[in-house]
Length: 196
Image 1 (tube, helix red, strand yellow):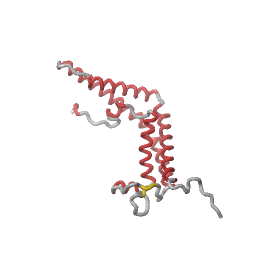
Image 2 (cartoon, rainbow, N blue to C red):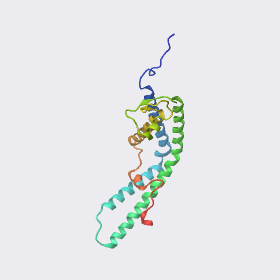
Image 3 (tube, one colour):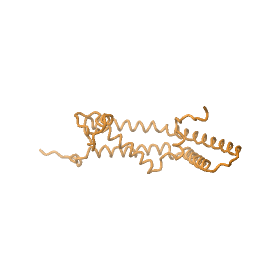
Image 4 (cartoon, one colour):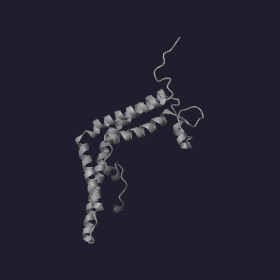
């Protein structure tokens, strides 16, 4: 009695490509959710504009040559501090604004990870081209039986794919954070040494 074999079941890399494909689709869904909840709103656009404007202003103020007069230098320092404070506040507001949709995206990722974990439990989905160090081996060999250190579990492959695909997809779609937001510290900025 002959059994029918699905199209990719006999393909050598079927499990790996399935995990990568699901990771890519999940990244698309997460970015669509982010676009609906964040990127298309007018408040996000105004926050992004104010961060870009403050970052450019701060950059030009820092590159200008200061005069030798002490009073001009003090007033310029105060202006720079005001612009930096404004940039930090806008970046914090942007981080709080993104935090709201982060919960929905985390829920989607949690559900997809649970589904994949049940589909590929104890199954080798890829082979690593190297012998990993101990801490990486514990992550890459999670849930697998056997002692081959080059075996890769679904969790490790999904983690690597999610990180790389989602970051590059955000850059491609233009959803990466404004250039001044990264330097301003985000939701939990470093303490200002000037205030101590």
